[in-house]
Length: 247
Ligand code: PGA
Image (cartoon, rainbow, N blue to C red):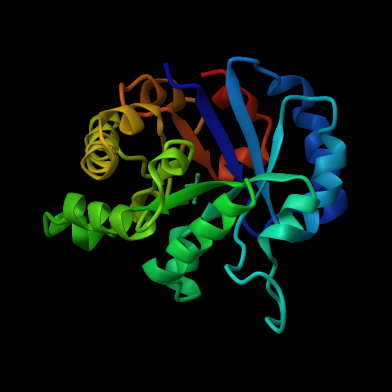
């Protein structure tokens, strides 16, 4: 039985002091021992958030990292830095990073490997545009993103990774995929992992849905057989996040 995982993606929201206040507000609402709860926060919020969630079950995640070890990469943050600051998860290949910052499948694959090397669990994002959905190429596109992201990653590492399926047309739009649409793609992701690594790994790896998840649609989405939780943007900044975790 796969353990559920609900992660908040704070994006570029919350100053360090606002972050601490939000953690306090959510404290009693998200302490569910049956679910892994992760706050993926802006880099500058990582240390104050790690401090604020001490003594709770909440884990801290980052929203991005660079794949090089260290050195002359102005503005970037390494896996070693994240690890030392208390990070256990990192979102990689979010569609906003792919589209706005030109992140390629190849760079995401290198980041996956670096995160794994440092014992940080990648939450690798994939998702199709509305045009790709309308053109009927959703599943082939998602499979190619997953295959590229996992290229060269060993089975024993792959099974601990998380994949977030986030249809781009559903992110921040209030337009959620139906639970059937979400399940269809999450099942295809699991089949793709089974092709790459076999059924046992596919059965262990957790797949999240993301895109306008809120308190009223979370339970239905998370009850689908191949959806093991969610990656939540807007609603992770509100008390509503507690209801999503407990869905
Ligand atoms: P949303 O964002 O929940 O605000 O749609 C999800 C995400 O981008 O991870």
